[in-house]
Length: 254
Image 1 (cartoon, rainbow, N blue to C red):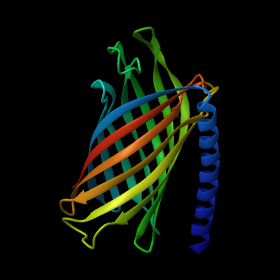
Image 2: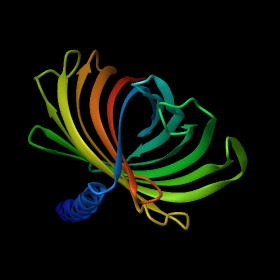
Image 3: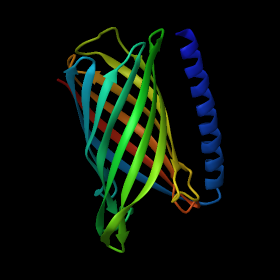
Image 4: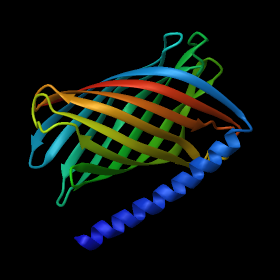
């Protein structure tokens, strides 16, 4: 088991190093190119259902909007994941999301079109603890079927590409409570990489760095508030987006 943990840690460190180099080099390139700075708020409800025999079903309903001015950006209706707990802190998941993107991606402009995307995913998650610090590694592979468009109209067919996501998160308790009133702090980073014949200049898709707090109302309900910096390279390879996001999530277990 120790060998498995050692391999995982070495792999994660290597992946983070590659991600850091990619992110740093992309930031360096971005200093000489165009960066759009935008502010958003995301509202999310996430129920989790215990299905028995170590299986669970997690849902995510999320509204994403520009803050200034207030305008719809994206909608997850919903993302669902079936999870199976394995041994030694591992679990495996399979699911997908029906994702709606408002176009154009400019908060100052009225919406011309809402483009759907069908996005299956598979993930592997490992949870560990060092002292009081909870550590989570999540590896996710997404298959993105993005509806084709012609001007302001939907066209027949879908464009396809793959996206690999790796997220590292640390969670630290802020008091000694475990049920109602328990609070904790989290910090994490997620890097996303594109692959596919349509990906030419943006293998690096985006990086999300975040901090947040969680407050438990009971053993089955809690509220999370996160601050996120979403840094993304656009498909032309020359333009970038730096997005500042306030995300509020209500989690509920059944």
